[in-house]
Image (spheres, rainbow, N blue to C red):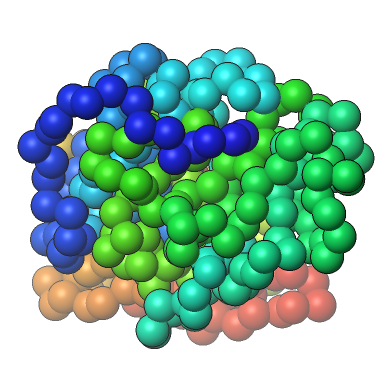
Length: 356
């Protein structure tokens, strides 16, 4: 989309602190929803506005640590398209897309910020993003040393001043649909009241912060839309997780929620695995706590907590008790070893082998 740096309106707003500061790790309204729906990614940005037709938004950052999603920075003020968010996008419509998207390559006309490890490309005068709907290059980044006006009817110059720092939002890909919108980026804003033509824009300081924070290994996502729609987008997420077999004392077990691999950890329903180990298992809905007792050993785990207890003594977990398909699942190795069982991984059979 063209002219994303257009200044729309002269409204002056008093914004939140532009410099991102670490936030206190605490529960936030969407923590349970995100933790129960997003397993393969570990970083997320949520860009939300108070309605469909406003150019003002805020950007929130979340990261998964030991199975628990927590807030990272204070909310950042952001600008979106001059026509707000759109349910149906069209080229040149001046609106930003809604939904959940992967983040792509970082870019900029200068070297990437110090301490950033995110994949980044320094742009030149030969770099273009094509928004010509008649071209086979539509919605693609093309490097071209010839005259761009002879090749395309419309294009973005990737070394524009507002693209001093930016990152690609992977919108309208696989397949690319001509006319559905192109060149959707996260980039620097012109000012705190300047709309874009469809991108998300933040201050230079915050853009550098995001490029330093983002980690390609954590597969960062961006979720975009009015606040009234965001939880619906999150809830609709449905991932297929790799299933893992569980064998206890030579007998393969089947649970109503199969054991699955999340972040290279095997998780299984607490009641199924607990009872298979001969433990008495209780779920306290009021405190959201699992309690399992066997042969004088008591194990307690709290939903979305990285700290468990064995006989009242606190122990650090490498993954928390979480919910998958409305079933509370526990880390199998920790749970079994807490009761003195021997746990081994059989890669050839994709199987956790537990023996008492």
